Length: 272
Image (cartoon, rainbow, N blue to C red; front, side, top):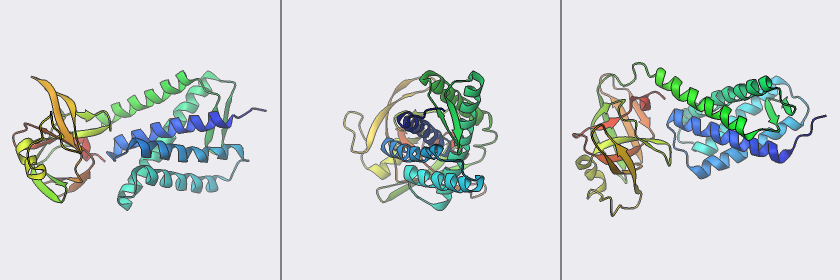
């Protein structure tokens, strides 16, 4: 009879849940703080203890898994709207299924001595190298898939409305795949906006040497130059397609640069 070490089971699931939540946040452009991500991952690992009890009916497991996914998504991303919660939950479930299938396939191929699967949870007296390799491969596959499926996203004319500290400003938007700027601390994409336009929100244009609270600097490179730009997270960003009136609330940072009066964003922001 196989021995299941509860500490290994919990650690494995915290790691996997953390990874899945990070991919979910990246795919849905949802704000995800490190503390909330760790807390939600740890909370989600509790459900893995179901592997220790006798096999439950499929319908009951579906209900439990759905309830677990909803509560994990709510804890990680908070409940900003029912539509956003449903979207985060569905993406979390899909990534969960893909990762579980990938890990199970790899370990079935390697035929490890300690592999146990029950109640839709798996336990592996795992090789950390194999686990990291599998999860990294899935992350890369998701990234490539999103790039290849970009399709027609970004076609059209746009306006971008930014709200911050009770003020708002609107400017024309430019969907540009060349803007691949990411804040690697939070994983959020950055929309480059003209300093002059943003000054209507923040007052005096921040100086890199004396940033106000809530601002920080990140490296930024262009075809002809590289340097540092200040960024901040506004209260809300709404991208509107002026051709058909469709609006999209996105989660991103605002970077202050020289953009000719436009808000330059990556069209992948419009996908989810």
